[in-house]
Length: 148
Image 1: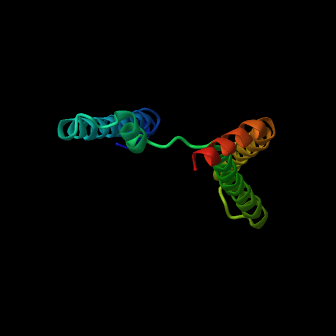
Image 2: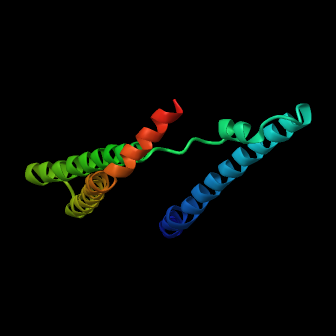
Image 3: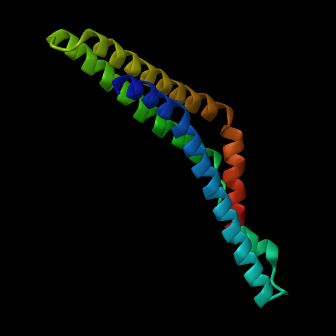
């Protein structure tokens, strides 16, 4: 029985869970599109002379600005890097104090190092993106101010 669980858990985590997550995301997008379509059809039935472009702009999801995307990368970079630092620090403390299984300690250290690397990658992406996209962000901000 333990052998079966040892086989099924990695299969479930590695195959079934990602497929399920993707399926849920696609299903959410389809439902949102169907809802917008129903709203537009109802509006057309009630008032055929309505400006559809304005209605579509109001009900369509708002696109994130470049600045918002960069700030999101900064946020996730900080969170993931701090998690990695905390995990590596915990492993260093656990190794210094002792009493922890060495295999578990190695595994947690590896996970912490990977998290730290991913967090640093997000932070580098933020700073490089900020440097490269300053002109585009300024143009986007000016465009928003013109609309307001």
